[in-house]
Length: 447
Picture 1 (spheres, rainbow, N blue to C red):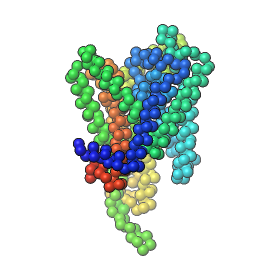
Picture 2 (picture 1 turned 120 degrees about the vertical axis):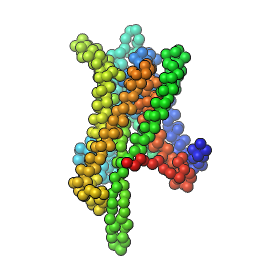
Picture 3 (picture 1 turned 60 degrees about the vertical axis):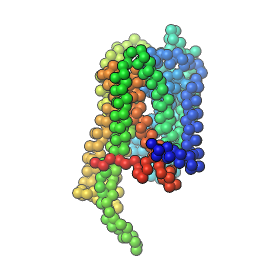
């Protein structure tokens, strides 16, 4: 226990690292303050009351990533998700559009240009999503629970300007944290949003425990489940398939470079949480359209989806899991190029033990990556569907408790925490301080 405390004290003995930590904390505090600034023309309390009566659902799941800002329709209602979506889209386009692929290979200048395209795409997505949220808010507005003060053209204009500006500011904050702070700024913003909602989940659990709707056995089971999920996330997040590669000795001028055995690390969870974000975004669209377009023509379709594909139902869970597995393979296929890896290894004389160079190596790497992606995709689908299992099998009615004691939230929290601790540990070891893992680093499992 003394080692982490000593590492924490060491972090504040390094002026540069101390400044980075304080800068990160200040930026995250500003983000949380902005999440409580109301949007003009919207009654946030009325909307929050309606969202709570809906028992979360897919919109509640989205609200978790915004730290409660979507539930109250504050200026940060869209959160950082438009930027995440734009980054994923641009990353996918880089692999299929030759012009973008050429830019990426130009180094720092090309990456700077791709970052600009990501920002423009984020603004475009913000405008589209702002219009969608405005239409949805107008659709759920009612005389019994008035959410909007007015529903004219000025309301749409206010939503577009406010929500887009809010997300642009969060995007700027994330970039500043990544450059001048500690950790990945965008990931830390999502981390902060999820952590900000956890006290509500704990308070809800205590209320249900006092009311007798939740017994102590279920509470202990939930905590045990949380420990198991955290251990599993750490295992899979740091898990790698290390492919042994043998390099020969090479003569360069009068020098001879030593050969030897190296390892090509292939991550078990190559896609991260991106498949969950993609699947959630796709499944969130029908519910928002259904809530905004209340017409007799669409009533049969809405009734069908609400009956067989409602949030947490068997149909929804099956489609959700299938989409996560599909996007795991899709994203891995886009980001992992076995042919390029095999060519680079052949160029420098590297040989996978027992496999011929060239095409055979590419096929071998593709086969290995496919096998470990199966494990990673099934794990992701299981983690994402765990809250639905908790709600149905353990009869835990509160969606907040189910989500925060198992599921995507823990996957993100553990992943971001590991990455941030690793960065702080790197700063400490560079200056001859013992880090959080004395004498060792975060090690991946060998297979």
